[in-house]
Length: 105
Image 1 (cartoon, rainbow, N blue to C red):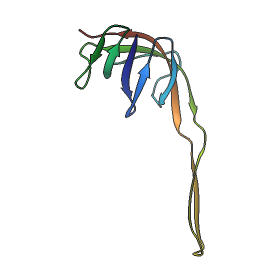
Image 2 (cartoon, helix red, strand yellow):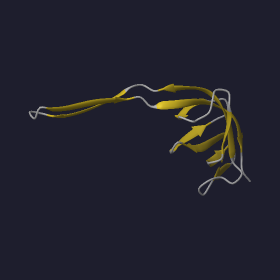
Image 3 (cartoon, one colour):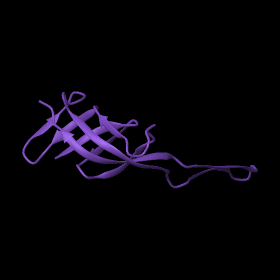
Image 4 (cartoon, rainbow, N blue to C red):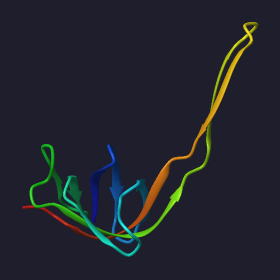
């Protein structure tokens, strides 16, 4: 069984047992979270697509850890104008493990 959930303005395809990184959530390690914004639920023979969300769809997950992603370097430069700007950014993330997917209907 698989589902498409919305978290942090992004959509993620998830399956039970999968560990994925989402935008930072204000939860501590070991906490459980339920995603109610389920856009699609499917298995081998049946697929339910929500408009916009599947009614009664729910994905349960557990927080595994927190961290920061790789550094992204931003450089702006104008040649021959003595202009150069450089900045860096590291995005915070939360690692979650998908425990269960409950379908709609």
